[in-house]
Length: 118
Image 1 (cartoon, one colour):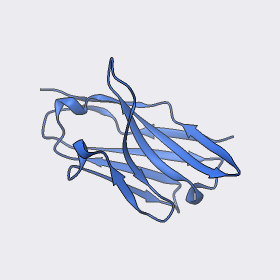
Image 2 (cartoon, one colour):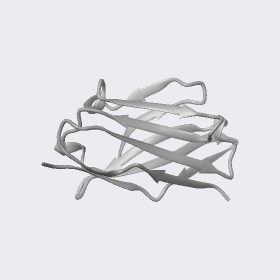
Image 3 (cartoon, helix red, strand yellow):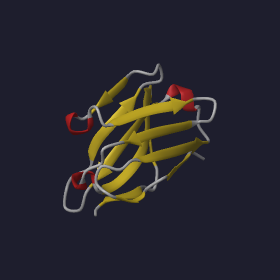
Image 4 (cartoon, helix red, strand yellow):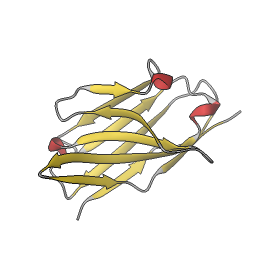
């Protein structure tokens, strides 16, 4: 059974930093594209950052230069380092694992709340 468990969310002041972690189990972690999504109240879920099985990364424009996604295949964990946080980064952040191998494999974590406020 595949499980993705996020941690590291919380309340932080504007300009602060947080590091989110997503620990995966029950899957061949290294074969998946790992993504971080977020959903703010009243808004659609958006893709924030992605990292391929080979380590290539992509970011939504609003977080470029502030967020860094990384993965540790030995620990089956993906991270999202978030710096220079802004109030508009406030959202529930979700970890997602995705790959297409004859069929689509798509798994989600339960989400972790990030609140940026003074």
